[in-house]
Length: 496
Image 1 (cartoon, helix red, strand yellow):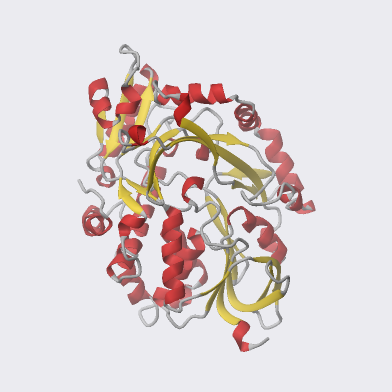
Image 2 (tube, rainbow, N blue to C red):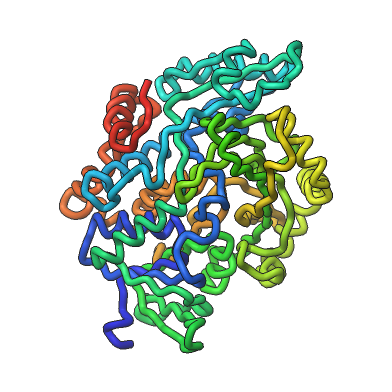
């Protein structure tokens, strides 16, 4: 293969994950030859695109699904703590990129935006009070406020209280340190810097249709150029499959035995979106409620301030749906093409034991526009139907993981799945992927480049980019405080 087609790294998919992995690898070793293959005409067009995700700096401040209630009534905040400190790594990476000039203006992708949790009814008010007591006692959630006073909630989120019944039990928590993130804009900024610095060659409109391991251990990645119909073959020592929902079928195509039995469960979504500036100017927060029983994490209802490409909007949803596509711009045959003899058992097992989820999705799919508006009005009682329009959100593919006994388990979250020598790795799953992209990229380094994470190689540079690397911010309160005090002013965020 000609030297021009030989690379150290090939990244498949030009979304926030590949942008982050490529950025971090280039920062650690500028001499790496990196290529990116993307099937669409631009980067960040699928799940990373602004309106295709929640835009939340997922720090588990407000997402109630991260803090389940135990049988004894206490609240488990362990998952919230994990996600909370994972977002700190993203903050550190972004602050480093701003300081070094790789990102010119942080306001182009991130804005300060308080995160609220909001509940209605005596039982949920009691739950939120317990949750606040647990979380606010920990240094990671210092400064979290709680109120069951309607007047205070009206100050925090005016849209949500106007027109609400005065005797309705309500409560809310608030974290002033939250953020709204335009991951599409961030993806563009990262790829622009990679291209301008010579850090990566990006090939758009190239759809990968072949992954083959060579006898020398390298990978040949074959892609078709949609513009010319020609085939481009790249040789790589390492391949990262960060192609969103398409990652499953691509890692299956590689033939690695570790992918045997894995399957995917696609979930789509619909937003209600309001661009009326009179409404948008009164809502400068992200407000999360409680998910319906049996619903997937991406369907937790929330009323969000969003700023995408400079436009201020309010989004509500997402309303869950079902599509056999694995990508928003994918094919209705994606699910069927992913079915193998080896994953048929796990698929059928999950289908047989996920009745509540299936019932929930069916109920969501058959909802009328009027029913969707009624759901919105539970959050925003005086919502005017004329102000809101439907917008299809991004497509997600949840992991169905083989259990080793012929069955399977539906897993919410993300997983790095690689072969024995970790020369090829795919990121499977969904939320909170974008917000924790830096954590996932660091996890990839530890999994695939462990021999480089030494004092003689990449480790000193990694600690410059992510100063708290190797420190558990869940237990080191002082390091946590220093990190947040350091990154907040660079990114324009609040501190407490």
